[in-house]
Length: 174
Image (tube, rainbow, N blue to C red):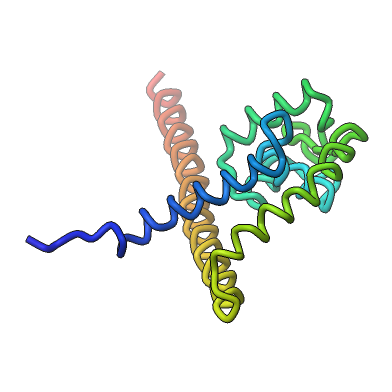
């Protein structure tokens, strides 16, 4: 049986680093401020005004159902606004409100301070490589999710075709 060492487990070490990052964020932003995900959403929307919720899933890496719940809560807090797009009646264009922009701007310096505290834990000569590695992992996850999402979209089209054939056969029998 192979020996397992937590101190060599990437999952465990990432979880510890994430916990430290969240602790630094909470220390700087406070419990009454934006959550890290809320800040990410507001920042992303401010950079991509009018983007769809589907775009936000891709841009933030937050899963669709979590993001939908978050946006619903952020709408109630008047941090975001949304409306149906003109090109696709099923899609919502998301916009940051003045309240949302104010909250984001208020939190930005604190978020940057929390990020700096996290980076202090990484030796100076390794910081660039550390960020590149995190970006590489994030990109690999995005590609994996995109592949899974593409595969998921193909299946319903096949099912619809099969149903149409079944309907045609049933109609011919009558």
